[in-house]
Image (cartoon, rainbow, N blue to C red; front, side, top):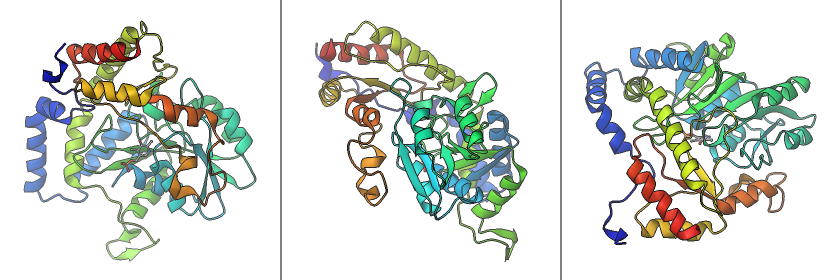
Length: 372
Ligand SMILES: *Cc1c(COP(=O)(O)O)cnc(C)c1O
């Protein structure tokens, strides 16, 4: 087969998505520029109201990224020096940055080998008198096991803040990502299920005091224009990003359904290939990523690349083994076997709502050729 002549299948195709909404986006962006509504304003307010409604929360506060959303949530929750915050080692580095920027210590624990979310037995073991909060990560778009986690948190009087950066719209019944903890933190990084055209993020909450506090924190702690009641940050969201996100918010439910359809088709097609472990769907999965496990991950990535198919690894280095966290307690190889094993075996296949069946068939054939 002369695969070299086939067009590249991208990992994510943001251009294909733009083509489907181009006139709406162009219109919204140029209106924002005409209005010079670059920071704050009506489009940000629309986004906050729209996203809160979408997530089933009373409030949402736009901010500059998922990372700053996490930092804002930590600070507003009163988490600081001397506190410990338990989270997964199997996540993107930003989950820990939010904790560290607030001055607290992240305590990394292992994940469940089936769904890759926090292993609650490990969470319970990690609780100490210094523990102040737990951050479940809805990794790859699948909800963490929130009911037992919330019960455990309640028993130990701990705050729960959801890292929902990969899980916009993930739901168990009518309970949505970002609505179950005290606060939920979302990223609008361009490649996320709901992506801006630059950096942006949002915090969701039902709590009015945190809503007001985070609004102030993200905007220099200001009370009135030049009176600052608390020391804050410049973590605001741009008007243009909000304008883009308002357009996309109308489509996110459809896009999530497409991701689910594509994921289910992948799982069905891959089930015939020995040596490929497809994702296990347990709780409200919106498939930000479609992650398989194989013995020879590097080999498969190379074989896909030779067939002009892009892939990714999320994430190759567990947080408890990151060079930048060497100073933290619990650092070093051998601590969290599930996470460490995953880091060597996982591969993310192309996943985006516009992925066609023909493209998908090519991906599966390429996997079959190498693994099968
Ligand atoms: C993307 C991501 C973040 C950080 O979001 P940014 O907008 O890139 O700052 C945090 N946590 C997880 C799990 C993510 O995937």
